Length: 218
Image (cartoon, rainbow, N blue to C red):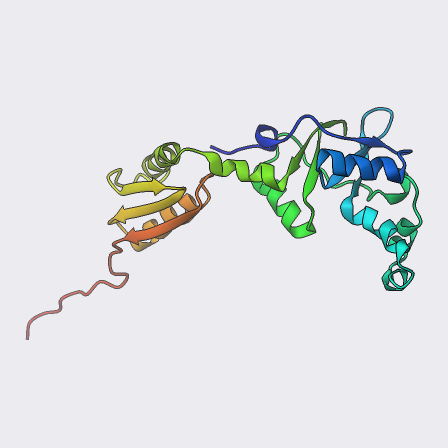
């Protein structure tokens, strides 16, 4: 089972428009306890995102010594911004409802962002996904994970269905003797990508990679 962004996203989203003031955005971030606000146009399409980091550039102006550290022109421009249009990061990094949670997680990790707007094919906002939402995949019951792994072993590998699979707290323990070492490694690698799996304890008894062949008795 693969979980899509639409399965874990939040559909009720706090948004602002291009002309929203700094104060309005600061109040919204604090009141709704979010780390970023999608900026939408009159057609409800996402045109940018204002994050806490974007807002902090303005706050830095309070200390005259800090502005000297804003060496990038973009940071200096944002420090002088008054509205969402001035402060937002654009174009916004977004995901689609059908994208996998793994894809969304990679984007967040690589770009070091905490939330992603979710948009439809026309760019319209349909939700938002956060780092916390991504952790929802680990809510899967252990028994459900175990059943998926057993089906994977039977149907994808044609391996012995009697390989012992136990799951506790999302941690999979795998015991038994695969026909070959390569098959065993492939099974373990595939299990690591089953959603909800926290870790895999490989306790398989692997056959010798280089079996000893008896020679003629002299």
